[in-house]
Length: 150
Image (cartoon, rainbow, N blue to C red; front, side):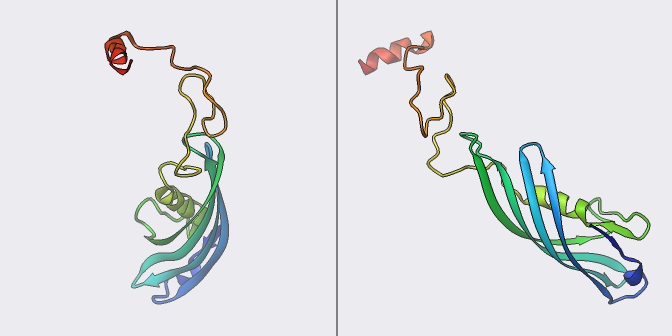
């Protein structure tokens, strides 16, 4: 969403409301964000103050199952800082929200805390299937340790 800030640029103390939805997609992450807030001219500085609720769709880092998670955060940015610029007098809220979504999402998504993931050998989903590779492969360097288990 693009917002023309011309009405508040020269009016200190004035504000412009923001209410929009922004979609973000990058790799295996899709996010739909609801944004509400305002842009305030505070002593000649344009400040963006907004609440964001984002629904993130991604995949589990362990088993690759689709995961949906909701995150909420606040945007408190200043136009002219952190790469937030105007195109003339127009602010692209899509860029601002995109930047903040990626700053606030978790490093990895997990479908559940007890997710067992995928077998590194055969690729079986250990939550639903049994591993088919068994214990046949033993690194020769650890063969002496295996004898201790017998």
